[in-house]
Length: 371
Ligand SMILES: NC(=O)N[C@@H](CC(=O)O)C(=O)O
Ligand SMILES: [Zn+2]
Ligand SMILES: [Zn+2]
Image 1 (spheres, protein in one colour):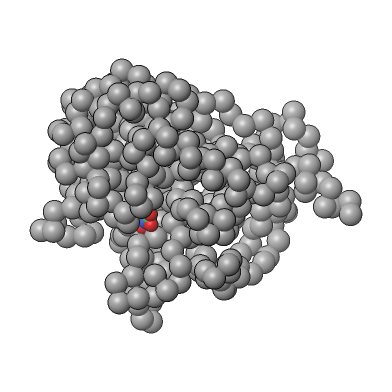
Image 2: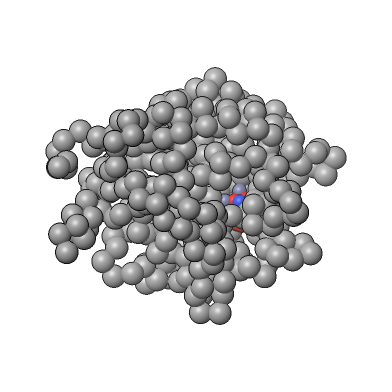
């Protein structure tokens, strides 16, 4: 029986392993939405993760400290009683953003980081940044404060092929930001390419990257298997197999620059199954289960804890979580849809049978066993 003062991971890759106990993870990139959708999705994240970096791409976007505080309040009230969950708020950078507001938000503990969406790159990014040099005064201030910059790393140039937009962003924008602000802490979010992996590996310690569960599992063929699969469409779009393999290698390598960020991005089924379907994959209900399967397949279950619970907080300079959670080898079937109020949302891997199941905190899992 593991206790919390034993080494946290009692994982091995033998067939006999039935139960994985790891430090409670955090999600360093999630969309919790607002209103009814927030209520429908937030507990899928809050039951697995102690903290989460909450994306600010609401409509209208979260650009002020007051808006972030109000949103944080709505998130907290939607979290089920008994779940200890800390939303870490982010500021949405726009051409007009006031550096003083970002600084106030960060020093008062409301903003943990700020997010750069190139204008029109993805969902609710219309108010994003049109040219990164326009926000140099903010980046200057963030560098001085030690406030992390989070990037949706895709160029929006329509002449660049959609599958090349991340690599082009690295060449054209990221290198420029790093050269201008060498001490700025930067997270390249939801990386999807071998180029991103190589770039992050080669860069200094101020650059990290998050990796989603879905980009570890699907390549671009999955979007077209037997017909168009709108629920597997997200941005950055999944790439060729060699990129997926590079991501799996990076995530499971033990390199502290890579850490967990689900990019769980729910949209109502009707918004996905449409002539112009929204980008985003809702993976919160199967997040840890999916990562655990990947780490097992790669023979690296002993590194899951680092990726899921240690590299992220260390990059952000935050304490590690004290609690432990249990993931068990128990086959279960993912529901076809999550239904809440009037909204249906389809989870990643809907209808599939998964090998691992998240069982809750060590205490909860122990209680359930004795009932
Ligand atoms: N990942 C996505 O495909 N969509 C995200 C936006 C984002 O993270 O780019 C969303 O908010 O729906
Ligand atoms: Zn994004
Ligand atoms: Zn996202």
